Length: 286
Figure 1 (tube, one colour):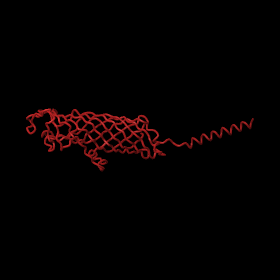
Figure 2 (cartoon, rainbow, N blue to C red; figure 1 turned 60 degrees about the vertical axis):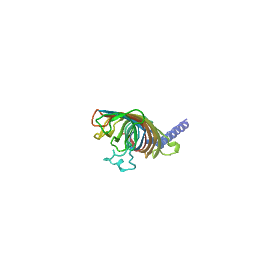
Figure 3 (cartoon, rainbow, N blue to C red; figure 1 turned 90 degrees about the vertical axis):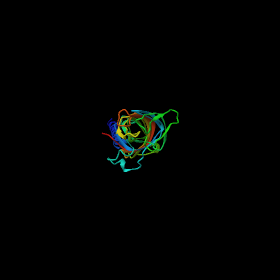
Figure 4 (spheres, helix red, strand yellow; figure 1 turned 60 degrees about the horizontal axis):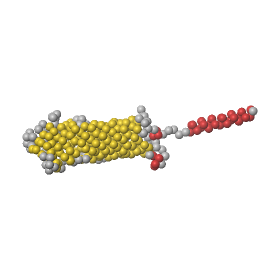
């Protein structure tokens, strides 16, 4: 009987040592294995494209629309201004601050600082009326698809959202780790994710406008709202840092654009936009 008890004791001791040994050599969980509870911040640049838009101008003694107006962005290229605190508003930029509410889903607030410039060298169809207070441009422009005005010399109109077409938005996004597809052995060193999201917000442009020979106006103003959808890749490097590339498209409607220093003068337009974005960022827990 004593021999049996000794054998049982030795077996239990062996099992205990084995379990303890397994626990001590178990690899620690990777930082990149879970996202819930992490904050993140991103900063980078964009290129923009805009669809043609109809722009309606109204005010004291005028009410007219320009149709199918063309526009473009103002690219800065690879430049130190993106990281120069005193000049960060000059290039086209994207900022985002967010929090992961689960391993896959995050909420964030951000600003897309786009730049919109009405292409000056164009002829636009015009419909409406301009009164005698503006003798150089006065007249009635019928809705016949023929009445046109040459904008090239800038005397009739200069129109830009260049500081900028500021889209302040809230986003909900999903992220998924696809590192296994590339057989990456250690995601704490390098991880590849795909990300997609949707968002919405308001437009706070600084519109630079010179209209019908009146004084140039260039002030910030809440002008409207927008919606967007985006998708891209997120490359995490050494757990905390990442490079993110995205494409983003959306709709902007600005029914209340300030064009002069008179409250009675305004413009409205709506259009689709498309961005290509390259950001750098960091994630962290508090």
